[in-house]
Length: 236
Image 1 (tube, rainbow, N blue to C red):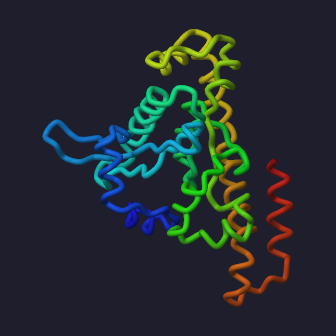
Image 2: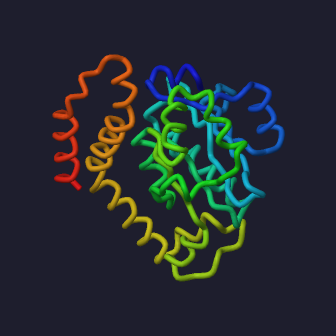
């Protein structure tokens, strides 16, 4: 996971092998393999704040199986696992990847502010090993390069205009005729604004990284920032 993050140029909250093994032993992980046992991918879940929130973390796909739809299937399975084990919990994730944002959006996640995530200190301690931790702390934990996305089961039920589905039927709620329309609209909305999301992510990186570039001798004359702001609001 760490090597993959380095290759992508992104941060990662590192976990020890023993911690990952524990998630597997507790049945809180999804492991993708081929029929002959070849490892393909992995993701795990963890509950926070007295099981009010569940985080999906550590998504990783073997390089030889990337761009085959495996990540989408793993995310779908880990979402179902989260709903089964913690049916009333809000499910969230932090990502810097546009592809993961699309997958999350298809599952019903929505971009939210950091204030809507768990306040559990143990969760945020995990960010200390991320290369972007200084940015997180400089913003008083209210923002960072990652985009926060959240699935709220109560809000999802309201959108479907139906009561919360039974735990085992959680994923079936979106395959009713009404549910299909909702998910279709969400996918169309994200796909139609994918370029906008990409522009926004670049703008976010520019703003949050600027103070650190100044420390490294950046020009900081403001002209580039003004152009980015104008461009951002134009596309918004």
